[in-house]
Amino acid sequence: MKKIFIITSIVLTHYVSAQNFTRKDSLQGGFSFERMCFDVQRYDLNITINPEERSIVGYNDITFKAIKSSNTIQLDLFENMQVDSIVFEHKNLDYKREFGAVFITFDKALTVDDSYKKLRFYYSGKPIVAQDAPWDGGFVFNKDKNGKPWIGVAVQGTGASLWYPVKDSQSDEPDLGASVKVAVPNGLMNVSNGRFIRSEELKNGYTSWLWEVKNPINNYNITVNIGDYVHLHDKHKDLDLDYYVIRGNEEKAKNHFEEVKPMMDCFQSKFGKYPFAEDGYKLIETPYFGMEHQSAVSYGNKYRKGYLGGDSSGTGIGMLFDYIVIHETGHEWFGNSITSRDIADMWIHEGFTTYSETVFVECLYGYDKAMEYINGQKNLVENRKKIIGSYGVNDKGPTDKYYKGSLLLNTLRHVINDDEKWWGIILKFSENYRHQIIDTETVIAFFNTESQMNFAPVFNQYLHHSNIPVLQIRKKDKGFEYRWKTDVANFEMPVDVLFKQEQKRLFPTNNWKKLDLKLQKSSEIEVLTDEFYIHYESL
Image 1 (tube, helix red, strand yellow):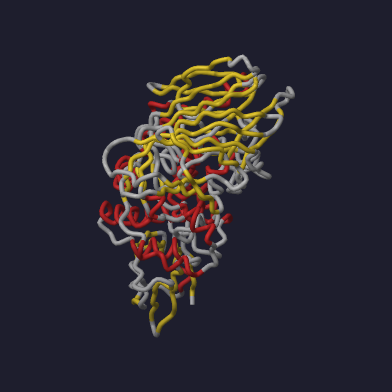
Image 2 (cartoon, rainbow, N blue to C red):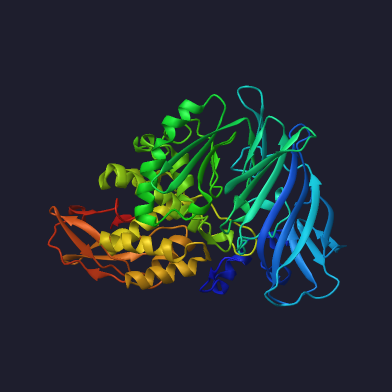
């Protein structure tokens, strides 16, 4: 289990009761005693994938430690997949299934100590096929332009137990890494996370491909990519860069992926050293759009700039870079290295990673372009629901966690109003929680400590309410007053305005305050809404 930094999530549990969730949701997203009484140390997956049958057969060796005494533990495997047997110390274990949960019973209670225990979970079946990966979870069985099988999988949110037996919770990652051994028909290659170890022809028409991961890894990040791949190797400074592309795309890939080098320089300067150097960095061409699989980034943007060939920001700046290369690599720091304990806090993954796009633009094209880009993304925010999901029920919240989360960070930057301090905070955040599991309260506590400001009401408003703060200015007697209109009580956040071409900082609260500016009408004030994600009302 990665070291977990959790301040508290108990105070937030009241959000769960606001929606209708089922026993199945709680089993998948919850933190039951049977799930939390053991600590996963390692996964060793050994499977065969048959492209024609669209089937999987094999086993997962799960190494773990007991941290609380129990005769029963919970692992997970989707209901449509078959449990063939579960073996521990040469004996088949009893188990029962409830939805995707598999409750395994040992002959006697597990001893709480530092010893490693290992069970082998044999399984088989035909995994769910995605209709529109990566937006829905499942396998993609496709053909490349030469008619050869081309297969991938993406399961974030849906659950890794869709295709292999696992402790399907972000709260526990294998301390000692993982290995992925996949047998595929001769003439095809499987590419998974980490370093390639070896291949072996099995003399049954299949070849096995073994990959080794040294670092802890999210269960949804473990992946397979099967195809007629060509391997391209490059190096940037001390980091290995490996690209696996469909045969015939080699020249396009060589030119297109040069963008990786300035991206790595930018991200490492702002977020710290690439967090999985021991496992290398890979881009793997996939038959779906993309996914942040750790050290094995899935790439399906067809060697184009932008987002599916367009610019989602509407500014034109998104056409200066390949969205999938930049965004999914940003996840190596935010989502893969720093992981939220509960998927309800997925804004930590997506908000920070969406912000990394703006960071990249600023590194290469300057501050003004970066501000234009991030403000173009305001059009993608709905502000209809809070962006924090409900805890313990596998609820990842609405899509506003991407762009609203990013705009929140841009707002914090300008509240702090000191770029040297801001970038120092972002770097320290990334480095302090490297390879660790955190929650929203941990993020808030960190930013409060490092900024020496109280950001708790600000985070609360942006994360737990659909509305954003409204700065109101009204005529009062012979002068003017201003205040914040918010859902959160005692909300305070400074904001910058322009008055007669001079920048002024206001310090609004929820109470009306006198505006110490000599103006005839409130329209003489320009509120810097490009720097602060707020609404402005002149009353």
